[in-house]
Image (cartoon, rainbow, N blue to C red; front, side, top):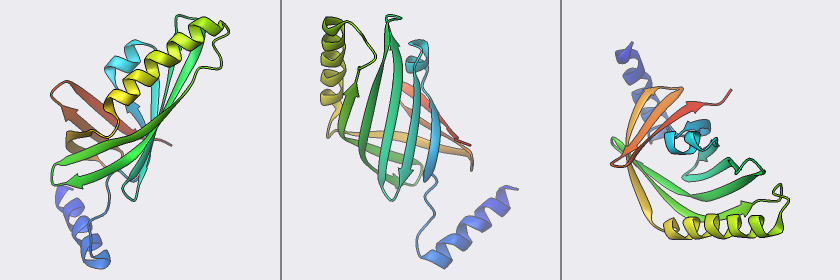
Length: 145
């Protein structure tokens, strides 16, 4: 089976002149830290660009949605993602003070990572599952259906 996958990848390289992008497409992303907060992350990758949308419940009174866009590169055994900017939507939180404070924290966290490349070890488990690891966390990407 592994030989067939390698042969298929080699055929794509020969036919197109460059390897197929294993990240291309839409993914459900499992991140233990986000999941512990009741969050869900979905990502779309292709042509060196990505968009991640994370939805998280806040204090049981509303939901915050952070949409991050950026670029990525793939090298043998690794992927580097660079955050190009984020938008925060907390419109479902009814209390304006809580909403403003929540948006402030989320925007501060997003700004802290903006423009900084994050390098992950990349393990392609199958065409439908990829694991990205860095020293502090593991992200499991499962192709969205």
